[in-house]
Amino acid sequence: MADEALFLLLHNEMVAGLYRAAEQGEGENGRCTTKLESMGFRVGQGLIERFTKDTARFKDELDIMKFICKDFWTTVFRKQIDNLRTNHQGIYVLQDNKFRLLTQISAGKQYLEHAPKYLAFTCGLIRGGLSNLGIKSIVTAEVSSMPACKFQVMIQKM
Amino acid sequence: MAVCIAVIAKENYPLYIRSVPTENELKFHYTVHTSLDVVDEKISAMGKALVDQRELYLGLLYPTEDYKVYGYVTNSKVKFVMVVDSSNTALRDNEIRSMFRKLHNSYTDIMCNPFYNPGDRINSRAFDNMVNSMMMQVC
Image (cartoon, rainbow over all chains, first blue to last red; front, side, top):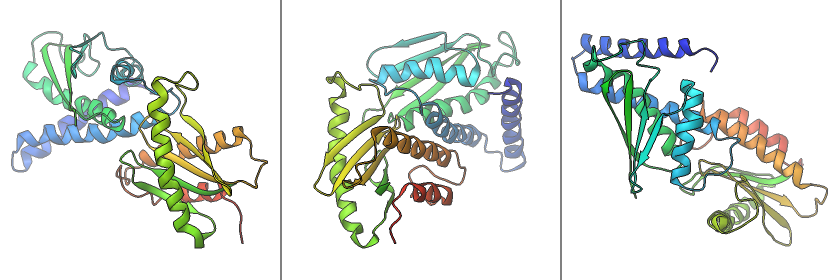
């Protein structure tokens, strides 16, 4: 990643642009989050292919989640996930105390209702990456106080 | 120089398959299909095997009297299978590995192509050219 600022600004514009377009259209607000998430999904698939080109084979699911928390997050956001928790039954919670895409927005509770828009792309990113590694999942995010946020990954057993 | 190269998706259907003497294509399709079993066996044995646990290259899958079949699995469970003529003994392991590396690099480039939907057949000319350069020149 050459310059972090480029990705941050582009991402913010993407979110703003999508919502502007939705307002001028039929005002279907819920669809924007889905569009962002599916964008993130396709990007995640391509990114994972590039990043795992030279790494060794993954032993199991936990290994894959650790890769996402460390290498993947570092390459995309220049930092690692601060906390990974699991119940060993297919639910993982990734906690980032200073999420790069939210640091510029606020440092507490202001603008909290707008936060989910900025997390949709990253949820898709995680889901796309996992899907390309052979794991079907559902990824959701929650923010209680910016810039900390939690991503919850639920693995679907087929 | 390979005789047949195939790229197989994680759901075990072919994304790309090309062989050089085009009249025996069906035989190569069958060989690649049967080699998938050997690939799966090698991957599932990874947990207990002590050698090459973390490598992507699988090595020689099985030899027949005319051909040798080599395999490589990426982290995204996409398999590359290469069939090589047995009479071509000059081909060393390192060369096979480098051929698989080139295949993997080209595959990664295809994934990043916005016009490519993951799961479709591969129709890229760049990929074709790269594969052609690795195949045997047979008139």
